[in-house]
Image (cartoon, rainbow over all chains, first blue to last red; front, side, top):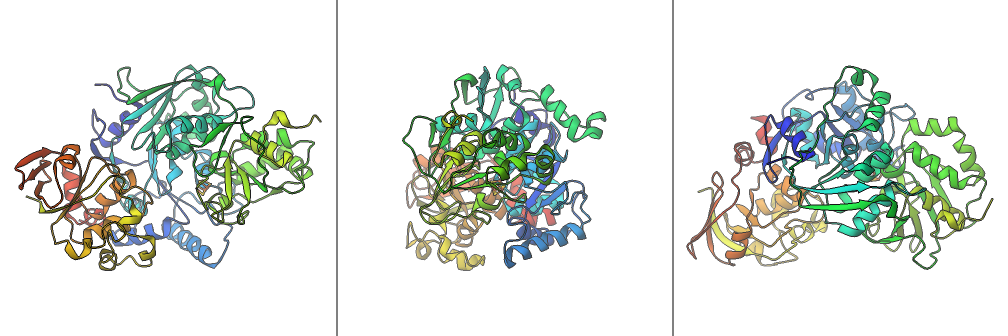
Length: 429
Length: 160
Ligand code: SF4
């Protein structure tokens, strides 16, 4: 029987010719990642393993991004433990604030050329599934897995079955990958892909940018999925050629394709041209509705950033709708470039001039308000339109606060209008 | 036989909050966690459970937060094995990593009743219901997972 793309990558990393859904395997890892919250307990686990050294100093990435720049003494101490361990282990990749390599873990790994097509990686963070956009197998795990994987370079997996999303057509401007994934989750629900891979295919794939694909894979976990994955095409190859020129030239990657007769639990046909601008209402990502189909909702804050929508493409889109306009007087519009590289690029392209003229505030790269950490925590009853990925109760602050998930065009338009709004409601310039 | 005991049977979607409520998470001491295991679902569980007993439940066992404390509490309470048609993904990982054997078997979850005497063989995946004299087959653990469980969890396995 044929294998899905994910199954082929896992089989190769387990040294097996064939695997099938449900099988338990042990696979070699090409990268192991942790952040400032999950790494400290993993260091304790690593110590218990009795090893002195991590399995490969080039394949362990510890990225402080949740509460950094340190928001309080506790988070400062967590980040310090991570930093000291990285120093002790002489890790190859470092992510110190201000350096080009730093930022939110799922933004910087691909951007720094650390993930190649065909790789297998784990991260002690549920949104590690983002990297499936590059045709890699990538999934989130717990701190024990991280600690043991730092020691051994291996992890065990239960081979997932898969849902296939066959894409045709092209997204209508200014819809993005965010609208596509919010649409999919509204159809299949927050456990619609439980245990399974979400594999994308079809002629529509080539119309999606790398940024779109990363946003789509990022939210696989919001559908309960184990991973999201895109086939490798010219767009992927151009991307890795740019971010990892040496490894690209050396052919240091493998392209896997799903077999013709691969088995899928379900196949969904999606015409991209029919996807509307979407907003997911509180308090679940599956509560997606098309913009223009609900009554006006007044808001207090807008957040544009995160591992879902903090890339340069997202910043450009936000700038396109903020340009020449002003944020509504009662709204705080917080813009958080997802990495230092994105931040520097915004500066270079003059996007910050547009943001400041619109009276938005610009933050250093951080997860910040996405998990209710800092830089924009909500008070009781406040409403926020956010380009992040979770709108659970209390995620961004008080339990009675409300989060509306959307892409950058809707977030920017909402900031101007002071209510949840799409770009076609904006006044003419 | 790798596990043998009396069955405690529960329903679907048993979440990590009822397995070990967040109010007891100010410690990771297994004995302390075991003393509150299942308290919000079955307050008498802790008094009745004996070493080797088995939990059988409905689908999606262990859903909710990714706390590793949940399988630790069940294991420290003396439970030798959990059987359900399906487990939440991160709970599944955490259980194996903490050395708590868990088996997916819809037939067993259907056929076994509360109080039945059951034995399980991890290497073959055979589940024998002594009370009803029925046998069900789960997927056997591959050798390395058996080793992880025999080593009392992933840490023990990699330090071998
Ligand atoms: S931006 Fe939000 S979802 Fe992404 S890694 Fe940070 S906290 Fe997690």
